[in-house]
Image: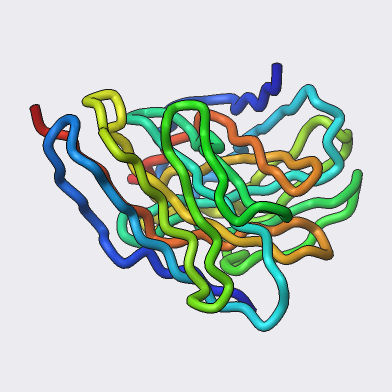
Length: 110
Length: 114
């Protein structure tokens, strides 16, 4: 069965902290994605990766970076968290044009 | 660039009534089309997809969607809804080539009343 896991369901951080969100998939997929979900805006793509150590900016990359050292793991990094990064973060991996999503991490930045 | 518009942010219906969730897209190239569902406090699950072939696609739980190229629409329908269908529904498109990025609509919250 398809499995995408995210390291935390809920996370509370303070402004200025460095935040790591981890995502792991067990399906040997090449493509992985990070989105943020906000009410009334749907999902917006932050970054994606089509291979190990390869990454591309999505629609809203400002304030974020990513790391993909191994095929199964894709990390989202908030270098200095700000209150406007309070959101739901969803990770996905894809194969044959179908994306499979993790359960999401609800991040609150105080 | 592609864009997706879901015409209704909220749709309340009574149990066993029919429902239609509307989705229009814009693209200068051919696309794949998807509907995802998000139940409360969960991630997104694929409901159905159109990649090629028959323009009418169906899911295992009674939903169907029809790809209409001339109207650039991919509306989602169910003839009789259940309480368990209460969720948020997202329409999405991706282009045929490239890294399979999805562009999502804003979402439609479907609420089923008894």
